Image (cartoon, rainbow, N blue to C red):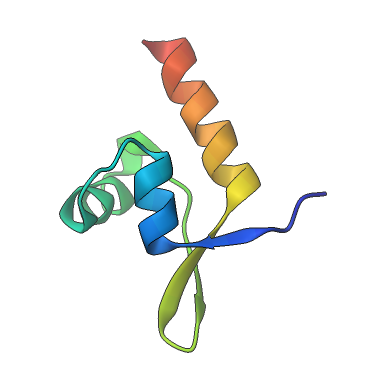
Length: 62
């Protein structure tokens, strides 16, 4: 299982260069089902595999 974690900046870039506010909206919208980050020393990190799976789901829904 891929446990690689990426920073918030890298995650935003992976999602098309979206803003931090867009991430906040996605995280607070249950309909988006956006992956939750892990917090390490008050910084957000996402599992890369979770983001890839979420992006694939979004592409299939489009």
